[in-house]
Image (cartoon, rainbow, N blue to C red; front, side):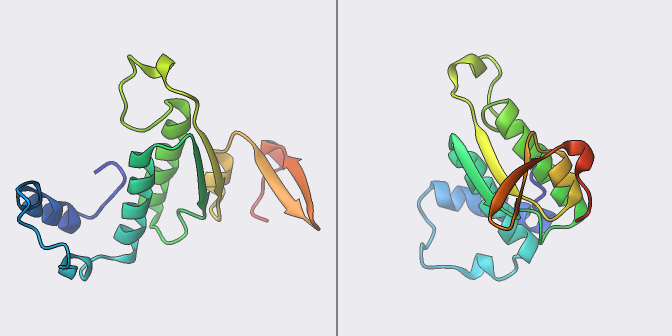
Amino acid sequence: KRIGLSQVLLTQLEESREQYIAGENDDNDVTWQVPLSNSDRVLIHLARAFIYNPEVLVMNRPTTRLPESSSQSVIGLIEEFVKNKGVELSQTDLWRRRPRTAFVSFVRLQGVRAADVVWKVEDKVVKVVEQADVSED
């Protein structure tokens, strides 16, 4: 829910949950994919990445196809992923978990502003850009 999946998809997942748990689902049935919007497809892939919880996460323009509200949620989850060493995990064992790093390219300025470090690649040279110097370019 936090990642911003549509209510239609959340309802569909809830309705099919019991069949899946009971092993009554048909693995070849892909009809559930038909009503998915592009946003829902992107959000499902991002949710899978957060659930996998890798130590290093690399994303190329994860918010490009998302509406503004979903984009903000995804950026917040990326920040949580790095800060809390995972998403939706207990704070009590935070000290046991290894650090998380996210390398993300953003098209939206709000994503760039959320970054701890910003690099700019220009003429085959990588430069660190100060947050104060981040602009629409």
